[in-house]
Length: 64
Image (cartoon, rainbow, N blue to C red; front, side, top):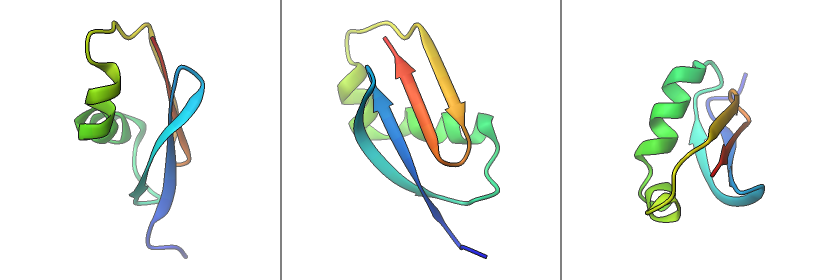
């Protein structure tokens, strides 16, 4: 069993960042971790988030 998996973070449908996460992470924990990432905050600065689509632990898609 893997110790960590790569989670892809998409903003506006394009891959913008990747992080290593626990394969058993919950969707709410994953969303909190993604939103705390400095790179994600830079990408979302001045924009309003319309929707966050989470498929833990593999992908998070942020629609602005």
